[in-house]
Image (cartoon, rainbow over all chains, first blue to last red; front, side, top):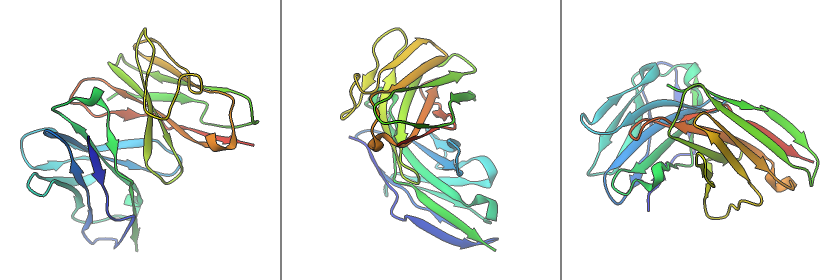
Length: 116
Length: 114
């Protein structure tokens, strides 16, 4: 079985400061990992993915995430937050070994609030 | 990346009625999925829509309540049948092009049942 944990319901950060949104995962084999962002009244928008290769993955809008196999984590980061980054962020995992029918398992989401 | 259009974007329905949600992808995709999301909460997978065959439902979801069609590689529908207030939710369609690619999502259908 695969699962994702996002331990923080909300993260508050001042504009211009670095931000981190945490994610840990559990899979039987090796993971495919994804981050999505959801703005009000919109669907989920893909930010970045880890499939294989470099542990540091760069994505859209200046976001990046670091895959840490020993800690089973995939934290989302941005060096300098913008007010427009305020949104709901989801981490998702798929077990590469089992395939799982290509089904994603999502975390519970973290609301990011960036303030002036 | 695939562009996914969902219709309607929102609706208010009477208890006991049914609503069909349409999902159109601008390119052929291998897999399509339907999710349910309570506002501000996580996504729950309802089913995988299989082209030319019956959908694969997740635990807790049944075909009689959520019939799904996928007549070709770019289109799917989800029907929410015999609706009750507990069905008030956001319904999201997603599509997957290739195995190691991300799923892409439509903007969702916001459904309220009176």
